[in-house]
Amino acid sequence: MSDTAVAPASSDAPAGVAAVEVVNLRKEFIRKEKRRFKTAKRRRVPAIKGLSFRMERGETVAILGQNGSGKSTLVRLLSTLLLHDGGEAYVFGHDVFTEARAVRRLVNRVSVEASFFKKMSASENLGYASRFYGMTAGDTRDRIPEILERVGFPSKRRGEPMENLSRGMQQKVALARALLTSPVLLLLDEPTTGLDPRSKVEVQDFIREVRTSHDSTVLLCTHDLAEAESLAERVGILDRGELLMLEPADELKARYGAATLEEAFFAATGRSFEEERAEDEEDDDEREVFA
Ligand SMILES: Nc1ncnc2c1ncn2[C@@H]1O[C@H](COP(=O)(O)OP(=O)(O)OP(=O)(O)O)[C@@H](O)[C@H]1O
Ligand SMILES: [Mg+2]
Image (cartoon, rainbow, N blue to C red; front, top):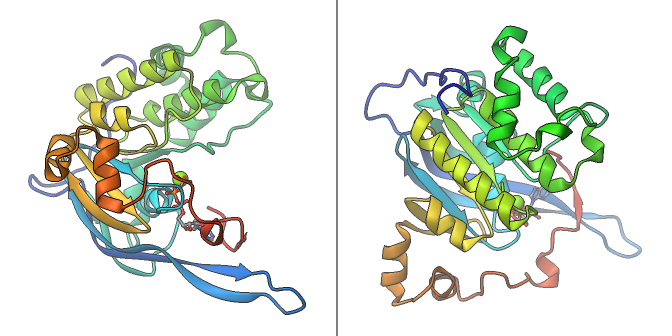
């Protein structure tokens, strides 16, 4: 797909510098607890509790965790959308919190809550994003239809307003948008959630292709264990803000004598992968920060 995306952004990082290096990273949120007849009480709730890990250039790491385990918070921190409460994080040697501009040039995030101009079409949204990244109309005239095709977006719907498209279709446009600029670090927060099985496979194939053809490093948060196993060299288990393991899926399974990743997850956390969190841990309290 070398002709479907711009030349990869350069990380300018010397050899040996990690694509991602996270050291004792912490993030807390203030949660307001509604109490009857009393003023709301504020409580600091840790979402990321001292994470440390390293990713090499070109590596794909999948992060598994139950709802609320901190996956999206980690992705938001690394994409400079949230401030941290302690520790350090570097992307190709750039400090995520003091060199945010440099980091933003290297990182692209695809999340389930991707936002678009709803009245504009997929092509128009991608066109707008590409100008934002300094690409000219000439750069993108062929590239936008090509990249939409690669993610399996039907060509006849390119001109339709985004608000008419299903969530799965919108997800494909979000992925295409992230790949327009060939990010060096791709942060994928549940990129295939809500897609039908065929679209899921198309998107997974595309992620594989981008990795190999663009030397991208991929951090993938997913609720799909098979996806984690087939796409990632290493799998991390995030449990209530703590990274319990980060190793190849086979080693993870062998460690617990587990036949499947699901069994290994259960053995590591004491909880089943799709188990709902207890009521008092649910995140429907009022949120103070939106990012
Ligand atoms: N902006 C916010 N304000 C307050 N609390 C937040 C905020 N964002 C996340 N949290 C809390 O931080 C914790 C981690 O949330 P996060 O969204 O990172 O989990 P997740 O692993 O991505 O979950 P899911 O699988 O449901 O997407 C949760 O307890 C959540 O309620
Ligand atoms: Mg999430």
